[in-house]
Amino acid sequence: MSAKVRVRFAPSPTGGLHLGGMRTALFNYLFARQNGGDFILRVEDTDQTRFVAGAEEYILDCLNWCGITPDEGPHAGGEYGSYRQSERKALYRQYAEQLVAQGNAYYAFDTPEELEQKRTETLNFQYGHTHRNELRNSIFLPVKEVHDLLDAGTPHVIRIKMPVDETIGFTDMIRGRVNFETSQVDDKVLLKADGMPTYHLAVVVDDYLMKITHAFRGEEWLPSASVHLLLWEYLGWKNEMPQWAHLPLILRPDGHGKLSKRDGDIFGFPVYAMNWTDPKNGELTQGFRELGFLPEAFVNLLALLGWNNGTDQEIFSLEELTEQFSMDRISKAGAQFDFEKAKWFNHEWIKQSSASNLISDVIPVLRAHDIFAENHPQLKKIIDLVKDRCTLLTDFYEHSAYFFQKPAENSIDWPSIQPKWNDAKTDFFIAFIQKSQEIEGWNAANIETTFKALVVEKGIKISEVMLPFRIILVGGKFGPAVFDIAEVLGNQEMVERIEFALSILSR
Image (cartoon, rainbow, N blue to C red):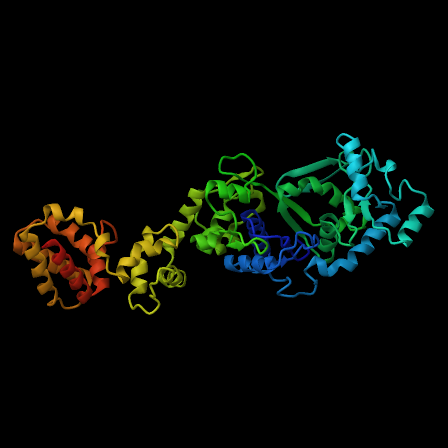
């Protein structure tokens, strides 16, 4: 590649960031990093009617959480700014006017009411070559009337004039050659009545001015490519057009149609990267982060929605993805989203993460349940003991609460102890309390040795006291190795729990 690689992620600040958008951002980032290029964030906020306050900051937070921070953008600066399209409004008109002067675009003065009437009168109405000569535009109207309308400040849009019966196309990096028949495409609006560009004009102008070399976007934008191809040609920039790749759709779990926010509500899983609260109605939509996903797992699962490295490997760090990512391994077919598989990725990442890396995520989970464990001397040890049991970060409360809080009397699984309880077991645990005071070096191995030696001395079966010991300490038939639990609890806490259980069992 001769020119320096420059790619852009160009979301609209209209609400929560869908995982499809996050995947687009990720693939852009990976391609840029792999090729020593730049990853740019460009905010496409030209549709002011859909603009939502706070959405831009939210988008940047999502990118930062995933570790795919842009090199240039509204918050990072750069020599090609501004990176908000609304702040570039003045420059788009000159290119739209250039297209009108060349005869490749025209002014259209039709009101919304007139167009609605036309749609009512004409079946499958399209504003294009079959009807443009019947409407109020600079193709049909006399030149003087057009000038008078413009001089009077009459509201108007600028539309591209699509050629008739031409075949145009490009080579997509994923799909190969893609062709379009121009007669089947309507005359899209390029500049709106408020002076704001539509996506069609803005994306071409900005990609050119920002020297974008590769443009990756969702498959749903493929039908618009014909308009963009012509704009690159009409504006004289054809030789500088970026290489395009249209990414496969992310499909519903049943494979029927594109995954939407509504589908997430139906199937019971998030489709946004992070929590999003709609400022208009206060509605909260849950994100993967708040549900309990690690960013590493979220990035990993995104990458494998439509891409693989050709092997059976499924767990990839961001660094590994950067090394191995390639456009030729992206599938043309849609990628079916599987939430169970997504949770599997998170479980695997939790298991392989160190306690040091997990601690900052676990502390807030515990704090939400009034457990303030930040200064607990054994917190890292506890995390290491239970992490293999946790699918989501939120699971750390369920699997570790007993380390910090004594099990409540009504939460202990007494029915699994009481029916077979006898004086011999009471005698054993009283003796174990005494023996435990003599253990030098309080660790799991020494606790286990003392416990088992006492079993032999008392002439009972170890199976008769192991399960009661676990239930006494944690409240139920769960948790890691019981002697590890005892080590973390410490001798005093262990003894207190045994004495409490004996007081209940002796009633």
